[in-house]
Length: 333
Figure 1 (spheres, rainbow, N blue to C red):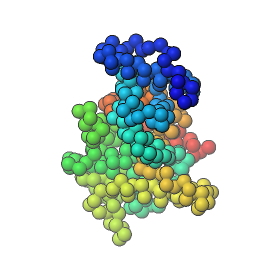
Figure 2 (cartoon, helix red, strand yellow):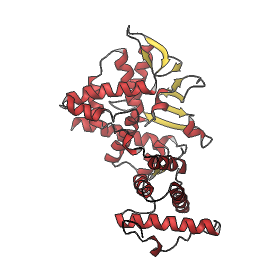
Figure 3 (cartoon, rainbow, N blue to C red):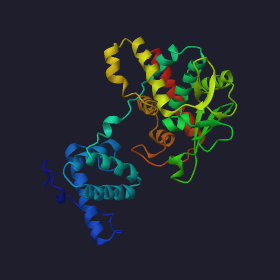
Figure 4 (cartoon, rainbow, N blue to C red):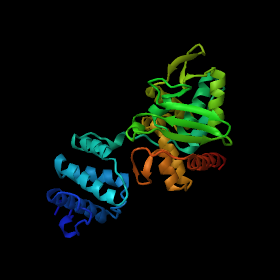
């Protein structure tokens, strides 16, 4: 019995261990029983497992068992989930496990979601300057396509360079983002995202205007704007994306009535990933289909982020239209 009263050996053994060696099967059965007992004691379903629940278990277990034991537990949970149709990203789990055992506060560094009201306020405050047009396109595209920071600043127009995260093309019905970065390469394929034209706010219209005014026809999509008002040749860095986002969020929060002290305590949680997190938050608030959300963000299921599965255009378009519609409604209300 563990220190908080969990008695894992009282639970039935898994029935999905026949492909393992006897020793591994016994270790995995014990690990799965520990996890199932922990979930039952807290009212969580053990299958399919939610990422937040799984990370909480790893943090709890890391205070009680050695890292080698917890590594076996991760293998046991992943094996059981695989037989339930869920493919866990064990590499991600081992990363968090290393952090927990080394005493690093891995979870506390997560980016806060950029909520729809704040994004809309940012858009209302952006000036009609080169920097303002760039930032409008940058934030709307990053939000609508739910891009990671490196994916967003690494996009290029035309034939991509070796440093590009992917390419963006604009058509009559919207934009297509083709990503070829590390996340996609792990599956040996590219991933495609579709962003439709919409009413205001429209990521497609904002991107078109930025490209036209900046005179960009090929190369990096999002570039530095010089102090003299010119457009540089260099792409934005991910750190620059965070600085831009924090500056715009600061102004929006002031408009919304927050004090400088309140902003100071919250602003450090705003990062490049806040755009991607904000899209998920808005999608959940708008009750969009979980499978569409999973495909758009590169999840195999709504429960766990794993390697990217290539989506079709119709699902992305439906999802993005729903979320952008919610963004517009949030401003009206």
